[in-house]
Image (cartoon, rainbow, N blue to C red; front, side):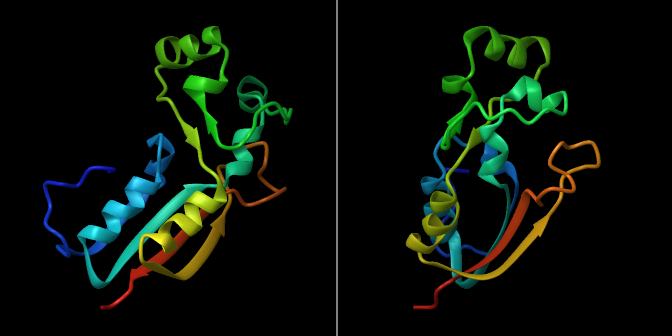
Length: 147
């Protein structure tokens, strides 16, 4: 998603990114590429996880306990202990995740030439420890500025 060089400039009317940027180590290139391949007036629909989710100790969070133990930006491959990372990717077969700042999530799109025209929040599943406290899923609609 950070390298869409196989597509020409201004090729798409719509780019849809449903929360997958959590798997991108750097997201500014993702916004730059999305803006590049969008036609003027084209739309980027994006979902992402509020960075707040990434401040909690992963093991505690998964067991329902909210223990602050991380910083933002966050990266599994840098912020987890070696054993925790090994268990995550081998034993649990989970992908490495990254928690980006709200600045990079929102201002990064604006800096890439996108205009945010919509914003929505929603909750995680019923078993999520933050459910009932704060909505942590965020969706934005951004439009590429016309020339």
